[in-house]
Length: 439
Image (cartoon, rainbow, N blue to C red; front, side):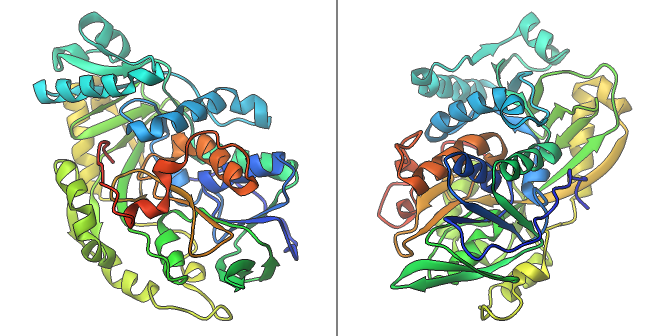
């Protein structure tokens, strides 16, 4: 089971209509709802399970500019601006703290890659730099004995995934949004080709605009609309420890392990691998460069999800129960061997972690695109539908900025950042694919 997520009570009544219906109650959908309702738009958010029940409540909790694909940097700059004042904005606690994040350099190739990233990020005036020696030890105690240098950003931070999206959802409700949990969206109705209603398990909601923020489920939902989205599910296994005395404050990544300090004084520790599912085979040519780019950190596995993917892919009439009702929360089993190996590597590098007591392990499904950059875009083939998915493990930190961009696209306001790089059509219009950032 995933970590316990702060509860959000569902509204009881299904509205007959709304300006916008948001499909999915993860960090992206919740942030979009918050921004839209503050613009005076009537919003209904439908979540098949619980708010932040899937990856938005299971991720590492990192909020980083560091090592982002340059296409994402404007969005994360906007997101961090929001994170820094989020608790005050919503009148609730997300657990955000700017404590710094560092990425180790394991050799000359890593140093060159980090320096190239700094050059690409220079136009955005990000306060990142290479650190070494005493400065490295100040932020990551004992690291200089193993690594010559690391890429570091002091204003990057962390928040608590089990607190953040629920707190924002409660704020959206207080501002006037309707939040429905345990309410799966089965599909869309169209009139004249345009969205005219969202069909839920509890009935229809008339609307002219739907926002699909379905995370790992987005590809399946779009397939029922004859819209192709190259997206894979990537399983990420995570563990958390009991409070640990003497551990570092700044979050840190090195080959084979990553950690960040939790609010309770424990640590979230992770590594990752990929499951093979039917779409992995179908989209292999589009994802091949990503696999090559990340081959040291990804493992291909064949397991029970392969068969379930075939079953879930079958079209279901809108008047019958959907796969979204059959699986309220994606709750894959963690790879305990991967987790334990990460902890061993961490303890070998930092003796304080040798005393770590593991109190929980879980896994989540990440929605990944071929270039590891999200889709935040109108769907040309379905007027009235906007999709926000494929955040490729980067969505938690970038959520507030992505939510604002979605709200701008819905209302026709000047977009907070140029949405061109996030268009869905980049996978079909002949655009050259760029894979610059890791998962």
